[in-house]
Length: 495
Image (cartoon, rainbow, N blue to C red):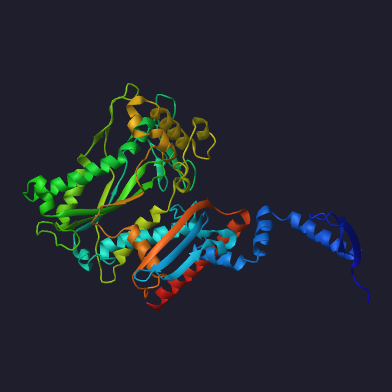
């Protein structure tokens, strides 16, 4: 049987580097038969038809260290934008100086280690956002039912779940009911109807948009966002003062008798205005381990919360263009007691409700974007509603006024002027994200090691994935999410 390859011998002569005679090199190049050549060309043509991500994924899968790379990606849960580190860690015996363990990235694919980006936004990294939502759930739940170094007695304390909204800056289209029925019709000074008799579905784009953009108070909306965190601080202070006054105490002595703890999360409404969900708990002066005084009842806490929400205000700096605004909470205030059954379902529902909103970014809610704006022209390039774009332009314009310089509004154009964190909590409410992450890391450490000294030398060398790596990591993230969902269903079925 003939050899399918026609081998061609090629002889070349090269000058010796050390001044010797020419030396010969013979190269044997296999020549493909016409059939094999057509097959190779067909394969190349098929590869060219693949997308860049698919070709890159094939390249990665053919790498000799692919299995180790896949282990790293799986360890990050399929993180969409992992951080790349290069360096080493050496663990030494504290007494003898003996090297107990050493890790070096020189043996890793690309000589780098992948770690999670830890971004909370699902629109940026679904894997890390799920992890962050889980941490938030346990953080909030621990303050309701105990656990994570919080005593279980907190479930018997006065606890409220409250919702505080932004005030009205002008009528907007609503969903779920007849929008804005108005007898007799009528128009505003700009010639637009004062009412809307249409039933809007919740997912239509007009929901949340103002009936008349020219009548809408965009400056007030942006400035309210910029002062929302200060308004919350004033609210918490006023609740403490009202509790002290109702108990016959000097307000400055409240901390000697009780402590007010909370965890709050901010959420954007359809009208692109922030409102606040919060869990508020009353403890003794030493925090969760201390029982509240006898006068610290749920009804008294409820009364103080409602009164303070309707009373506190924040004044903006005076501006010739806007004036001085008095900012308050909206009229829609909801406060309800958190009741605990033996199974703790109510507490779990509250914790899950709060955790759900922590992972939502501005892009996902349609209220702004998840990246900062560096130039005014960039606002016209983003894919948002006309209402949100006007809010962004207003934020940029007000940010150029000297009286509003301390607010840094142009830095927060992407969040429509809101400068606060999505989740904040008081120190004594429950555990922290850092503690929860340390507990996770504790499971992969060697607990039998003696007293050790760790010498770590790391540096940042990049972040993100190539197109093919991103495709493979997304598949890993989906598998991890599916496995967790199956495990959750099995636990529920076994209970």
